[in-house]
Amino acid sequence: MYSPQLIDHFEHPRNVGAVLSPDAQARVENPACGDVLTLSLRIDAGRIVEAKYQVKGCVAAIGCGSALTELLAGRSIQDARGLDRAAIQSAVGGLPPASEHASHLAWDALQGALRHL
Image (cartoon, rainbow, N blue to C red):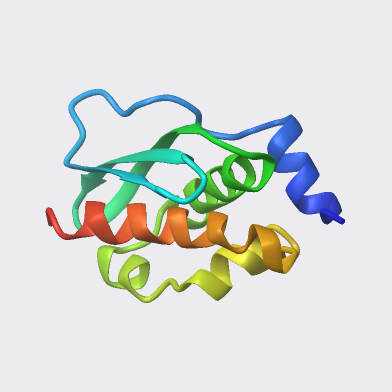
């Protein structure tokens, strides 16, 4: 059902927590399932130097949040704006249709955080 990449991100989530004094932050919720994800970013010289997340949700939401923070590490703001849901899904080795909402949640958090920059 879930890919080895997603299971790895679930069992060993990366960058869990909150950035101290973030330059950008967003909290999003999926009202259908109750998943909540908060993404915080620290920016230096136009690059994301730290990305952390906190999530209350399913296996896929935890995995997508973890993968997103890895995708963001070292990227320019412009490059981060170019990420889409497919990139997040690819980073976790794909998602079953019933779990695609998790990549939407992570992407929505990214878009919300980037609006502050």
